[in-house]
Image (cartoon, rainbow, N blue to C red; front, top):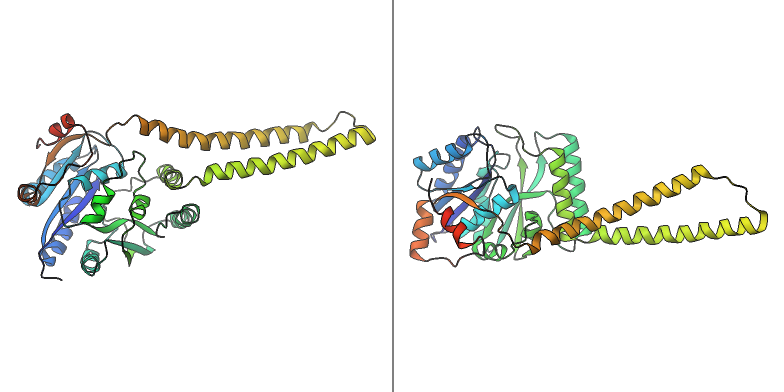
Length: 342
């Protein structure tokens, strides 16, 4: 490691993770202390319904380098991750989940790559232990579909586990849209990037919060956030169907004029009506997805609200030494409310 002193922030969004947090803290501290740098661990409680918040505050009492960010309700992982990044003060920031599927022991390699000149060092999965073949297959298909449909090159088989330099983080925090697909936002900002391969472990404790319905919604979010391919596809399908409809109409007119046509064809008529009706509903649904995003953005609501904020020693020292410019987050009333420690 470089002898140049630096502060590393680790952002950990968590929802109902009381079982795994103590184990996570133990492994994370062993890694960070081995780096020999200043550090802070920013835990974000995303409206948990178990004892997650209590465990976080207990960890902070044991280690003054822990920051606790308590959201006013469950806003979802993408927003919780943004809240943690807003509060991180390190020269570099690592994003990692609390379930220990992403090993903290990989962080020294991420730091080495950052110190060699990369602003974005992302961990790329070469294997996903402890997951069903259905989830592995759908994840593989999703990453490749987004890669083909989007003009942004989103790395394949890559989650949120990564390191960002301070300048990459500052650029990311300028993006304040409400519908946040963080993997796409990480790729959108650019900057020199490199992959570090690793084998993903099974969850250490607790149960996953991502059922197939939530994964489906995340996939829709990813597709509609970084590409208009669904709208283009609806246009192409509509054009092809229109051509087929004109051709079929010409055939019907010819048969009627040339040979006469008794009343028949009810099954084919119903198939055509139902098919066209289905295509139209799909096209309207695609339009609705994009229109809904416009509706949510124009309201200009804050991304999140804080119920509590307990800063780490590193956070307070960094702000006292060199106050950071405020990020466009919430209104000042909400900010003042959030600064109250629990």
